[in-house]
Amino acid sequence: MKQFDYIIKDPSGIHADPAVMLGKKAREFGGTSITVSKGENSALATKLMALIGLGAQCGDMVTVTVEGEQEDAAYKAIEEFMVENM
Image 1 (cartoon, rainbow, N blue to C red):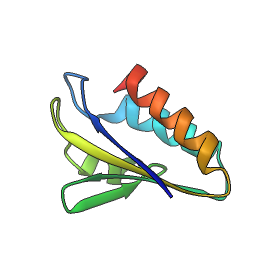
Image 2 (spheres, rainbow, N blue to C red):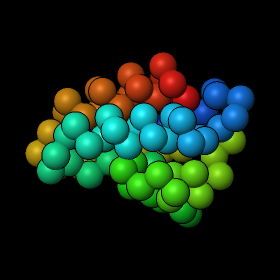
Image 3 (cartoon, one colour):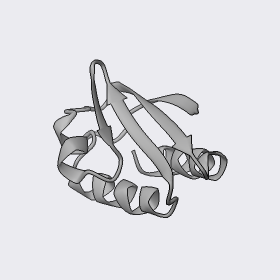
């Protein structure tokens, strides 16, 4: 299991467009679970409404957890995605 914290920089927070793109990126890593958490709440990166439902706004810190067969590659790709898109 790998984990990193990320502070949301997008002025709109986690909204539909980046959530869809994140889900698409996460699906590239079959057999690997990617979870985004804010406080007590968490959502699989592949679940659009659950991600939006976290209510993560600009300045909020989220924790991304990657676990499974391709966790090394997924960790790197998701971290890069977050920096570029969120």
